[in-house]
Image 1 (cartoon, rainbow, N blue to C red):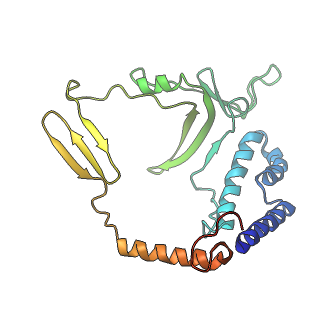
Image 2 (cartoon, one colour; image 1 turned 120 degrees about the vertical axis):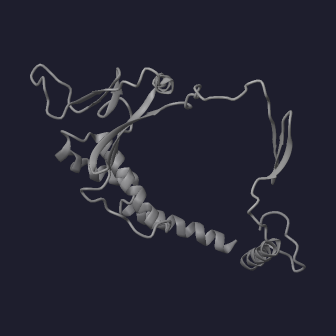
Image 3 (cartoon, rainbow, N blue to C red; image 1 turned 180 degrees about the vertical axis):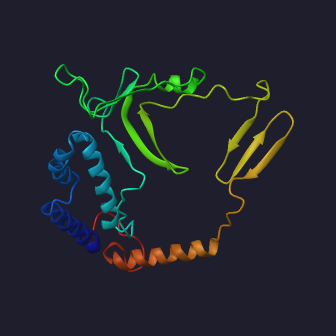
Length: 239
């Protein structure tokens, strides 16, 4: 129990240090605000915040030990830019992907204005059904394919993806029953019945599992001695 309280105390102290130094996602959003003003003709505030969030999550992985190194992108690397919503900046509206300043009477052709129509193929039923859902935000990807730089647009839609109906089925009248268990799966049809293992190549080492469980039990008892009686039984109630 003492180690548990010490861990909570340490976590609070570390959280205070991160707060004092501004090591928070909102902190890097505040930092990127002044940087974004220099590129406001091309990058909106939401796009800049999304880039800042991506950078913060990368550094956070290094902070918590889930990553060993931070990789910085070079000028020629593949990049992606995305928005946080579909209301301003980079967005999908009325069948077009738009980005930048809108044309006005004073400036009918702004340099940074992008208006690209999205026109899926007439036979692509999946794409037409997906466009019926509400667009959450838009992402633009830059990729180099066979020595040529190409740009792709991704629409992140709400809800579940449509069901693909153009798949060829051999015979729709035949039925197959499947019963999935913890380690096996049973298959039953009109012509055959089979019982297969879910992971045939996975060999369970019961001796190794028991050894790890005993080690965990010893560790739990040594670090929480106040929760156990002299005979090894667990004390009832809170200690």
